[in-house]
Amino acid sequence: MPLHRRDVLLAGSGLALAGGRARAQGGALRLGVLTDMSGPYRDLTGPGSFAGARQAAEEFSAATGMAVEVIVGDHQNKPDVGANIARQWFDREGVEAIVDLPNSAVALAVSGIAREKNKVVLGSGVGSTVFTGAQCSPNSIQFTYDTYMLAKGTGDALVKQGADSWFFITADYAFGHALQADTSRFVEAAGGKVLGAARYPFPATTDFSSFLLQAQSSRAKVIGLANAGADLINCIKQAREFGLLRSGVKLACLLMTVVDSIALGLPEAQGLLMTESFYWDLNDRTRAFAERVKGKRQGAVVHASCAGCYGVTLHYLKAVKDLGLERARASGLEVVNRMKAMPTDDDAFGPGRIREDGRKLTPGYLFQVKSPAESRGPFDVHKLVATTPAEEAARPLAEGGCPFVRT
Image (cartoon, rainbow, N blue to C red; front, side):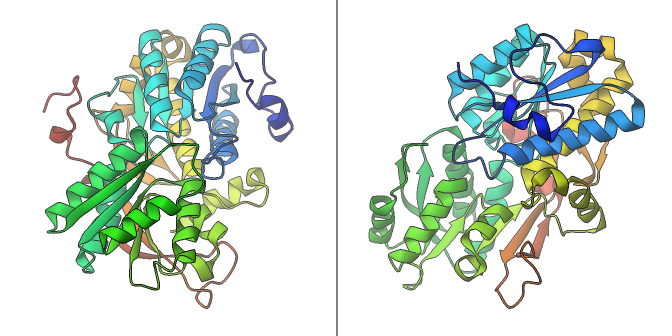
């Protein structure tokens, strides 16, 4: 089994422990950030997610005196690797909750294990709506976003601009499938048409030329990119190289983040639309959070997964304190139920609540990438175009099909 990159990250936090140690000493509560430290989602999650969880643990420990330890593991975007790490953490390393879980296939595998062992999953990077739908778990939370929110925000906006025929390029796993399905629903409901789709092997694809040519041949007005991270950036760059954007085709970046905008550069990314639940410069509270955590980001931008891991970890710790540490360790289900009963409030997202199916209700913010002339600094890359209220940004509870929820 691949070892977690904890030894490398130990110097960055007094809360992180080197790999292979036994249970947390001195009765400390132990959390594990299971994320992508080496693959296509590393820049969107990875060290940033670890930083957010550590920030929450440090603030909570300073305020309450409760000892909290945070470790990190690399799931390599492989469900079997993620499942093996989760079992080791739960069975041998005293981990009570697993945080983040980008890659929905990994998240679903780990969620099942946590339910079996009555532990907790605090999803920040997980995107598929299946996570709070047909495969929901009473031991799991989906905090930062989901494919319904992304599809509604970006899909609706483009169809209203007249971009009413679509072709999808889709990562061939649970997240990509859900993102394509949810976006197709909104496109068709608005009177648009889906002309086709191409699924590519994930995470083994870097050359998207054949898929882009299929999209071009369909004569669709929009190419919907149902992917993220390095794959999304490669698709955008290759689409520009092929002259697709000069020919009038629009790109729908269905999970694009501030990290991608910076990586592409404003001359390449300007004008693109995306939906997110967090932006560092959104308001006074988000700026305050970004200022506190920026030292852990080592010069990188504070992104949504960092914020999500901060928010969900802080809320979890509040619920543990409310229950008492002994009761919290005895039942992850009881902790999650307490998290749902308590209102959420943190500097990254403000006030909110967690619904019965485990979905944290969060507004969806439609952003447009600024032009170079509009930007005031290296991280000043987005401008707010529209806001979808939290209750509307989440799929209606009755439509989810979560088996333990009565509607």
